[in-house]
Image (cartoon, rainbow, N blue to C red):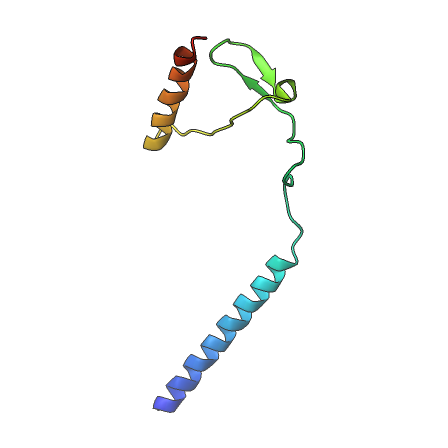
Length: 93
């Protein structure tokens, strides 16, 4: 009885190892998705909450652009929103 349980357990480990092995092989051979490092980011339009104007990413070429995403329910996001809103005031603009 004990050996039968051990045999079943070994068989389960063997199957798990096989699944993990093939998942790893599939991920190694997968084509990368999204833009690659050093490539130009896709252009998009954003609404500037400070000036009220729309702007495109391509119009900012050559400038430093920081893009962040916020959620109203996220405490660290709320802290970042306050910092971002205070930044133009601290910069004098």
